[in-house]
Length: 130
Image (cartoon, rainbow, N blue to C red; front, side, top):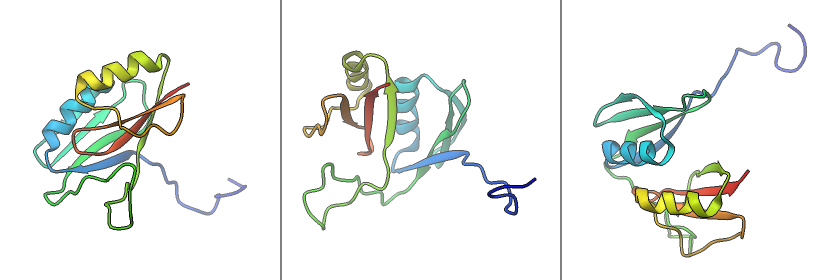
């Protein structure tokens, strides 16, 4: 093997983890939202996998989880560490679905072609037209 990275070990991102106080509740929310398959589930750790493949979404118990503030108002606010970008075909329908699953739309919407929602653990995520 030659070229960039030829001398490094193989690295592959397998999961994106979201910390939360209630793993089963956040797992149930994202399963309703995405219709992905539960790969494993306990009170401390759970994994959802897209049947089409790709990176899995995992949930890890963090008893002292502090929901991020979106948008942050000041340096003392808990900052968002990451957010999910979810591609959709119909923004209005996807936004209504997210709300029906328990993710209210954020009062602050930074773009016309994106809808920011907040999951039950406080993590913002974006729905956008693909």
